[in-house]
Length: 211
Ligand SMILES: Cc1cc2nc3c(=O)[nH]c(=O)nc-3n(C[C@H](O)[C@H](O)[C@H](O)COP(=O)(O)O)c2cc1C
Image (cartoon, rainbow, N blue to C red; front, side, top):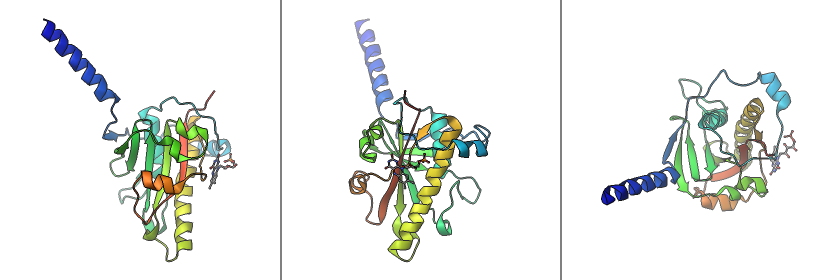
């Protein structure tokens, strides 16, 4: 009897440990394409907000944020955002409390790349550390554009399109968001173990408004 009780306690404890550990892969629910406010209203509501609650976002919202930023919308693999020559050379990292994930648009899933809370490195303002989801836009700079100037123009355009989609989605769902260029790109590059040709462009926290 004692042994059985111990075994149950062990199972419960290991269960809660498993629950606390970051999932290696988070399959995101399908985005609801009928939800939200009309587009024109979202444009009028779009704004930068720097007031965030630490409250977790439900999987449906996380799904729709990532879909807005980089989701696949067509059979040929094209997306919610345009890219020069359809190079799709932008990747989106999702920083969460439990770890850093890379968004996989094909699977519409988040793949764990590093365990741990690195959100505070996503910007120089306090809310980066506690916003429940911080997107980081990374560009493979040499994929498109013949000069560094053109490469920078294209990278800025790609992350600009993605961030504006997220802004409009946030407006539609009453969420807070702000695109942030004020960040230590070299430090984030090291954290993400990026290749030489990859560059962090912007970050963008998303969450419920703070009180
Ligand atoms: C490229 C870019 C970088 C920005 N960087 C920051 C930033 O680091 N921190 C911040 O609080 N806001 C940042 N912003 C938000 C701007 O301050 C904001 O868009 C501007 O004040 C206009 O306000 P609105 O977005 O509400 O229209 C950035 C905006 C852009 C487009």
